[in-house]
Length: 281
Figure 1 (cartoon, rainbow, N blue to C red):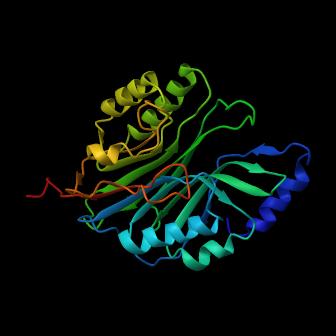
Figure 2: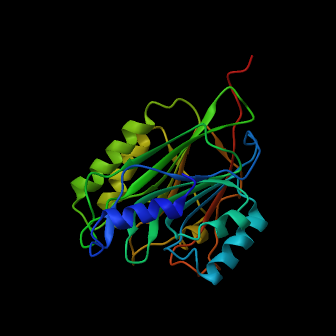
Figure 3: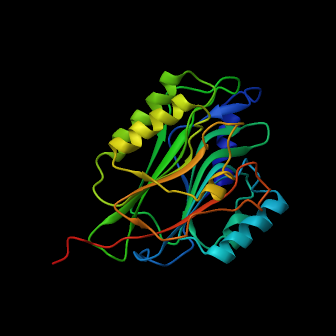
């Protein structure tokens, strides 16, 4: 969708202005900046971060730019990303391809909010999955964005899912969202990365997440004891943010939590993977 201004104006005029949070159909806003055609199978660098809608904050922009410069991720998964009408400013300094899946538009501020996935290449395919249930108060759903990429080892593709799991609802609704994601991921054979803010703030939620990821053959990225303690949590709860993977390997000592970053109440997670085709003769 190229003309963001026109799209938002249509939404604003179509719906009652007094209704602030407007739920959207499953769509993405996309931008292609890079001409690369594949991701290096031997170095798949991932950044995952709930940015708490801070991406127009100058401190956050400085932090994010430094992370990009220092770690040069191939794949970026952001949750709670905002997109205003002046989206062109993103096009100027983020020289990656990106796909943004909003779960609602704030009519009052004319701002999208949702999931943002960026990569050094364009996805082969993309799919948005929106929860049937809504979080209370603002009455908005949660959203996940599935994207598929070509690896330099071209016998397979990498499937990624950037997800923000539903909060402030009963356990059955949390379980239902995970089951929907499990169904969507179960058809893919090969490398897979499942990342995001899973809102696993109690043991029951963590157990359900573990059951679903185990069923999919996924392994969590293991952060060192000191690193793990830096991941966002509530009091003594399990961590909220995770990166899971399958059919790829984590490079030794690549899993990091950037605890010096304070522009969001969540800390950025980093990991580097490699894929080796074991089916070659």
